[in-house]
Amino acid sequence: MKTRRDFLQKITVSALGLSILPHFVHSEPDINDALYEGPLLRVAIMGLGSYGTRVAEAMQTCKKAKLVGVISGTPSKIKAWQSKYSIPPKNCYDYGNFDEIKNNPDIDAVYVITPNGLHHDQVMRVAQAGKHVICEKPMALNAQQAQEMIDACRKANVRLLVGYRMHFEPHTLEIIRMRKAGEFGKIMFFQGLSGFIIGDPNQWRLNKELSGGGAMMDIGIYSVNGSRYMTGEEPTWVTAEETKTDPVKFKEGIDETIQFQLGFPSGAVASCLSTYKMNFLDRFFLNGQDGFAELDPATGYGPIRGRTNKGELDQPEVTHQTVQMDEMSDMILKGKQAVVPADGEEALKDLKIIDAIYEAVKTGSRITFAK
Ligand code: NAD
Image (cartoon, rainbow, N blue to C red):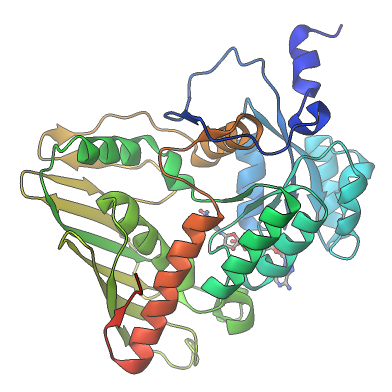
């Protein structure tokens, strides 16, 4: 029997003939919406690798988003995903034919989860096919590519969101709420430490063409992004230095360890480390004149732990990708605005900073952002 819920789940923005809605709703992620009966964001995942698999599993408990399609170059993976997630053959594509998704009314959005160097062209193609795009971080290899992707999505009248899952994480959001409420006083300092020891030397993450760089593009970006949402400011200058202890594994253009500093308009400074050479390095620390906040771990898959000068935080543990996809459904289908935006413009801001960090490493100079 078709229930009201079945009926409503079939109604999507494309079915209703709506495109991009204004961003008028601004609220916290809704992680308790058990009785949801609204529209579902129907998503195809492109790139069925390790993170794509994690997102697919997390989406099984989404209330507002559903995995309905796949794009992959590996027929055996498509077959396995089809049977695991009941994906019909008409919603399966490869990298050669996925432009045909344009003619598929049962897919609203494509989530691009491929190596970084492929994001730019794939996002442009998805936009041209008229589908909303969610793209993994880093959204592009540099700010110029990011701008082109933003422009293409705007022209195609589709949303461009980025897999910044920490923007929806409860401990993170509580610290942002406290900072906005002035509970730490004037913010003076942020420290971001992001790293892990990378394994297989032959993986795409260590291939410049596919990764765009080393640890900075992969894990250092969390400290770049975190410095912005933790302080609530955009930097005006950057300095950076690189340390390389293993030039065989970390070839030219693949950074092993970079220390970088950011200066903000208020006078606050950030001091950060990005590395492929240390494990157990995932810590954010924010200091104001009247208090502090710490997240450790700050950006792993969870559990996230947080404390402030007032004590431990006791926010709920959530599966980041489940909350992210439910929130992104609301952002795309209902025009909801995230507390911390997770769109192409945010990615552009991060990539401008990363471009400047690489420039500072190369020149040894302090890079100032044009106003
Ligand atoms: P992965 O190597 O596990 O998967 C990549 C997928 O892309 C594979 O299925 C591979 O077959 C496919 N692919 C298509 N064309 C390819 C090509 N030319 N070369 C290599 N692989 C190709 O990588 P991953 O860890 O899933 O990372 C994918 C993306 O997700 C990256 O952009 C990464 O930064 C991002 N990521 C994000 C998070 C997060 O927490 N938000 C976590 C991990 C990865």
